[in-house]
Amino acid sequence: MRGSAWFPEWAVLIRTQRKARYWDVHTMARRLRQAAGSERDTLPDHDALVRSIRRWESGKITVLSERYRLLYCHALSIDEQTLFPDEPAAFNGEEPDTQDGDPTNRRDALRLAALLPVLAGLPEDAEAREFTRRSEETDLGAATLDQVRQAIATYDTGYAAQPAAELWEPALQDRRHIAALLQRRTTLRQRRDLYVDAAWLSTILAWLAHDGGRQRTALAYAYDAWRHAEEAEHAETAAWAKDVEATILLYGNRTTEALRAARTGAARAPASSPAITRLSSQAMRISARLGKSPGTLRSAPDHLPDHQAGLFSADIARFHSFAATSYLWLRDPRSTEAHAREALDLYASAPSVSPTRRAIAMLDLAIARTQLRDLDGALALGASALSCSRPASAITDRIKDLDRALAAAFPHSAQVKDWQARSVSVSGQGKIGLGSIASVVSVS
Figure (cartoon, rainbow, N blue to C red):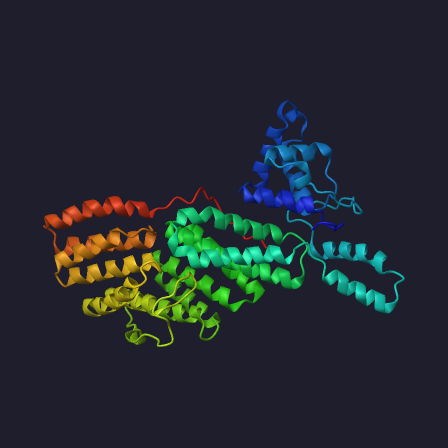
């Protein structure tokens, strides 16, 4: 927080930059020692250096020596003015070392100590105005927040048009940008809005990781989205966080947990929102996976549009696609076929709206035709699904389901063997590289 004597901005910056590289404090110590080159032996031993790093990051020391500033700049490849902006040094003493950083009540006491001299001797009305002025202090402008919202809207509407691998890095950088903004001075409203933005971006990252077959990473971002949405008390983002969590758990064969996530999200979703419609369909689809009748999936909600672009949307095409999957899992190929054809008829007029869901509807219909002993129809639908221009792990999983169904129904068919050879080469594209992700850290 620039200008704050009780917690220097550089302490936040060195911690944020370390975590952005997924380095723990031991790695940071080794990097500083490397940066020292031939003078590395003059540094403290490893454990002592780790303790110093923790103290620096906790803000207990408000001025860092020039030597360590230069070592940090070298280790992180960041210039000194960016990493160590000028800071007042009103509190230059040290406190007893702890592993977890400065206790909150101590930091608040220091902040109050810095404020009291400013207020001392002011008339009562002037003191009140000073309280108000300080509550409005912020390092963020409206343009900064508008850019964040525009980025989120772009990911929402353009999600289906680009492969997950191409969207991952930009979305990750935007999420890190939010984390950095949260370390700066903000108003209470701005901080809440940034938490909501963090929840949206983490939900987007969860979907991207899921589509790329990185399920542990996907769950980590889904949980991060839920926590930030809950802290901000924002019902809509909380609901969408549970929607992606339910999908990840369902495809991970953690069906009971998936149903719990869907029901939790539906309970948090605003009334008549796209989120509650989608989560209700999620819950019914997951129930079908558990062998329970989907019931109300027999009729589509009449308030939905036929199809609607956007990651955070609900439409009749998706409803029918979910219903087709539900009946497939209930071993009812006739009902599967009816709903899959409804979905595909709607997607035919807008094939770019949801290419992944369209491909899954084709594969569900192909499995239904397999169960109805229509080999030619099943293979034709499977071939159409393989031409989907947006690879996703959900498509890969459903291709494997079709492979198993064909092998069981037509064990000696040469056509099936040819299909399997082709599907293996295509479905191998479902694992989309999203970079090396060792861990996901929730930065508040």
